[in-house]
Length: 398
Image (cartoon, rainbow, N blue to C red; front, side):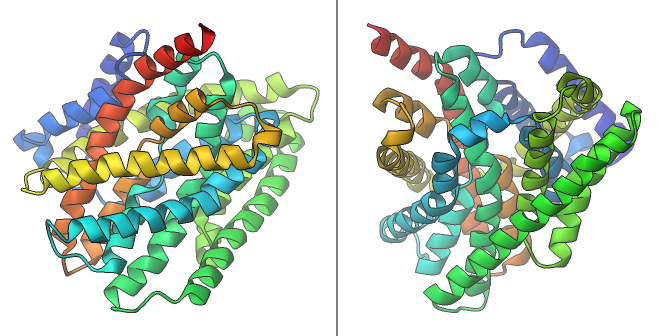
């Protein structure tokens, strides 16, 4: 991707963000994805090659760090049990249930192995609330809904990569599922990334106080966002979880100092520009990349998987909220909104890129199904969040 490409994509993003005033009925990312789809048919943009490293190391890390350091430490404490359970045990249970369903239903449409079905499920499980968090805050009477959706997404991005990596190795090497080896890899990579991220985040968040110049604090936040990731990857830990943990540590540090607004002012100004810039290019690129995978004859299976993933997520979310009912006051209606807001997006695209660029057998089939489900989720779930939230809120208040 050249500099002129970047400038044009940023210009398109600027126009869309400028014209979108309310950001309610049609979230910006949906418009950007549709525009990106159209741009893929133009000769100038058809030459752009979207790589997994581009999505993973540039766009995803910046967006995750912004979400993490801006996430309220008070909200994290309040919903820690729910967020932690949903993003670990919940995501594992979702992958297993959705994988089993894909395996047995897929038998009527195509041939897919059980590991292949689990692999596709792991690709479709991580959530991406970027396009709906602002909508939830505008449409819902309770801030808890947006906080749970946002907090869950930050952590389940990391756990989904671990799940995908383990299953992908089994898929490419034709290995059977070994539960103990799977759990050992999952825990080692996940906990290693979290612990290292906490250490890096704590050290660098303390270093923020060494220099009063706010520009230097911005520089340090960039080191924190990207440095912790690459350090964790060197130890074969989850770099995504390291980035999230370091961002949360910075948020925690800010909440325990008297001049929190002073320290956040410059950071918010800088990352407030970076975030929409990354979002604009990312969702335009998602539209461009997904287009070639949408022309296939498996759309019946795609629609079944899409609705099945929604149903399974509702079961997991409502079950989790029932388990932790003593620590929260989330109603059944609100659990429906949380389930619907679990949109597939950035992380799923990265995992699909990793799979289609690395796998040799059946990569096009699984890739086509995966991209199609993600695009359906991005469009229909994003559009439906506001009216569904308003409908359930009105019914609750009657």
